[in-house]
Length: 96
Image 1 (cartoon, one colour):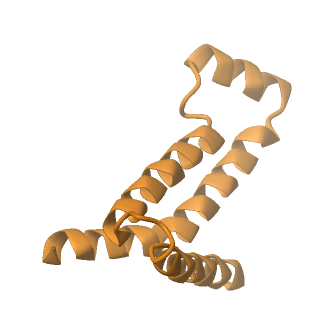
Image 2 (cartoon, rainbow, N blue to C red):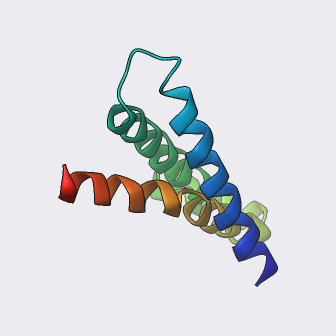
């Protein structure tokens, strides 16, 4: 439970940092959030092993059976970290 709170808090802090970065960059806050959300989705998919073919996944699991579990833990960690970004992006989309 502590790890979940830590990841969500880190994601909220990251969101605050992105808000202040918008004043330095010539882009709007919503555009920055869209780019960050796409990057976080790609990173999550890459860590979970979804972006590789099934043959490669089976070969990796045959060699190291703990790699799947480690990949899923990393994926869930990234998802929890990025949850505040997704929520703010949805709110901006609905109210924008």
